Picture 1 (cartoon, rainbow, N blue to C red):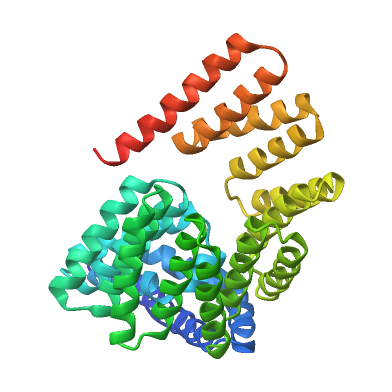
Picture 2 (cartoon, rainbow, N blue to C red):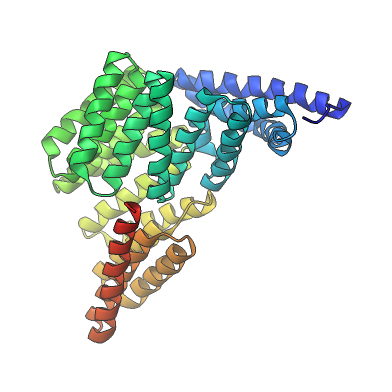
Length: 389
């Protein structure tokens, strides 16, 4: 290990100070209610210095043991704040460094948490096979360390991947195990996440009454914990249930409640997703102009925070198909296809190709439509098989 210079000692002291600031923000955020807003405001004020000292540790952790310890500690300290404020590629870089640092230190407990953190980001960007490997590794580590909370999180995350792949029965099995374990260890946060995840799968299975009952439990628990973000997600998911049951006015009311909460805590990604759901609902009511305005606003939010735009572009393509604007719809679908290929996301690539096939068929281009449809099915089937290789 490299010897510490005076400059390194100074940076190390600064890093420990701002690590303490980050931990204070996270502790305040976890208290919920107005503490959440105050924590986010403090985090935003202090982020430049937190980032500066964390970056110093990232650049030196391979050569300095104390920098490796700081690298691990920073990655562990941010909790939900990182999910709200850091972009996916930034979190991947930092969590991978945390994994390497934990291995250098032979710190299995930190390694278990970092692997799970990395898996969550990979899942968010659609890399389900890599995310699943992370969660299974986390589960193995958690069980070997007898860390029941980490085991609970890993089982839930495996369930999310199964849900994303359309394996709903396997997902429900994972969530019920997660819920039972969370109740056994009295982890209220994990209970809430398990209820929310279970509600999503029940909705996808068409069990809307059961899904609404589970979401109501999730919302009540989130309110008792003063968790604004969980309240917003539960309200939005209840809106999705109403949407699928064609109760559009009730769905819009729930979406607007969720949108206010997302904006209160400046959750830009949550805001964008909620706006997208509102746009879909307005489209179902044939309010195409308002739907277009809301979907474009959602796309603008995603672009501002550097998130992927493909799903939003597909929604705008669907809207323009409904409006009969085939040229505009084709433009949105073609752009979504280009971005999906650039991001190496076969799922969205397949969805975009399917939209293009529908448009080509409507325009009387049957030969091109058949080619696009075959390419869509091939891409989606290849992605499904690749995930289980």
